[in-house]
Length: 207
Image (cartoon, rainbow, N blue to C red; front, side):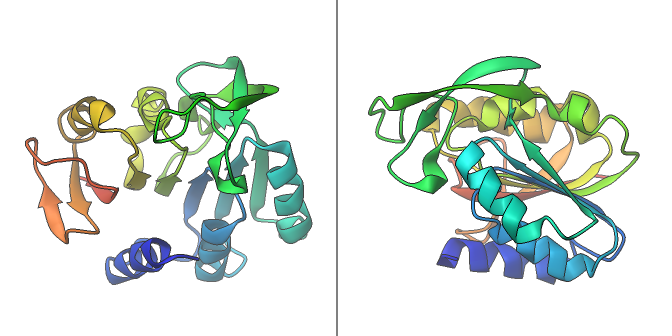
């Protein structure tokens, strides 16, 4: 767990983001850092959707969390379509992605195809979602485009942003289209429609 994760979790704790019996979603679960955090908060109650596109990472997650009945494992990419997509191998297990390049725009090796799903499809049966954490190595805009219905029933979105060119549309979707107020965790300030890209932000749906 790095210092960003620790600060994210402290920020969520300060705001009481996760309580027992909540429904939470870990998009881009990787090694399960946030799934474990959610699990400790829920104490066997509620539901955790643990979503990871890498079959290798997902197998490790299954071994780690498979015995917990409130965790739903999903081996798929999350995007703005329900289909199959190519996915790519990064330099570390955390960097599998569907965009095809890293944050320096270096092309990456394809790993084959993977099923992809929108959050609107995945979470259609849920009436209320407390937190959606999204860390998808540059595909965050695609994820947000695929959660138009889900946004209206979600209280918090914890989002990691990777590309400056995507940020204006991401910011518009979150603040204007979906009605969230967003907090830049690293800078410790509120995000406005003119703010530069935060690396990580916690967004709360306005009531």
